[in-house]
Length: 323
Length: 233
Image: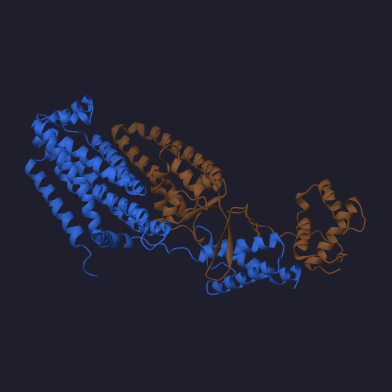
């Protein structure tokens, strides 16, 4: 069959098919008004695929092949798009899926915990012994600023609600941004993620050790107690997500490197969503609870301890039983 | 486009129906332009927000920082998910993000490719990203490689081309399949070539035009093309 009779024979089919695609591609797909019913659509798509193959095999002209290729691509994108999941899936993820994924990567979790907490403890003890060590890390101005923030005897000075909101925005932007960068940095053979873990450990350790040595114990520890569990765990888990990428690139096992990276990223991105949720919670507590100096120290320590128990119970046991 | 040669950046994707779809992959320049446009939109929006929120004082600054965070990380994710795989900048340049199998991008892929942007940006101005694009087959930056995505051209709708009506004549000599295709392509592209160029090209095919000159030669070639696509005399 020559090209023109071929085109004439199927022209009506192609017009109906294109009109159906137009309806489906709208923001709100209009399935009822489409010329083809949804039951007929897949069969019509397979017929189109066959016609495209025939047209290619018979070397019909370029514009016809382009037109059929485009119709086939649009239909392919309609048929093979991922289903949209909402609400319920998000809840399932937070209550069960996320802690399960963390437990599945338990060894990587402990590795990241060591990469973060060992430098933290080491630097904390070292700076506690000889406080001048902190100047190897921070400028004198920064140290003075930190010292001023936690100096005791400011009970009366309470931040306004607007300032709390400003700090909330700052923690969201800064802390979650650091979490995302830790994940992304993992793709460089894990170096970026490991560096972020060690660097944050050393930094937090140095500040804690210094303020403890200065005797600002109550003002500092009542401040960090509330959100510590969520924020520190969030940092470690961001490291886990990042090192998964690095591990896949460095040691892909039986997969190709690209395929190993794709699979690790698909798992890592789900961890990083959980991390973002933890860090939002931490930012909220840090901005609106930790900063409130009217709350007695005992209450703050109690809430801080409860936070740790909650995080441990959540990551250790949530989602163990099938729903 | 339909008969790719090695020079073209065409990615062939095989579908479960056993056909191949041809996708035109977009290179670094088009993507950089789209990125530039998106940056203007983003920073414009942030500037506008900062004007509006300034009246709220410190609290407004907090809201602005949250907006900064969301626009910095989730502006492309939201558009790629809910606006046919294209941010406004990509849409303006006719680009679209798809999975490597040609299907629309899903949320994990959109999130991965945009979080890993932080590494593609290193060490300066998308250094790693550009190197990865030049090395990989389908111009994928690190984020695309990890997410399994690529950026393609969304072709404008193809209008069915019709040869101008007229007589159909069999060619005077046997033509190979490729020669027949060239002749048909010449006739179909008539509307985009100026008459002088058409006559110039027709003059090269003296064997086919039986010594006709100028417009008459072009008309003769069209008649042969009509016959080849199966129009009746």
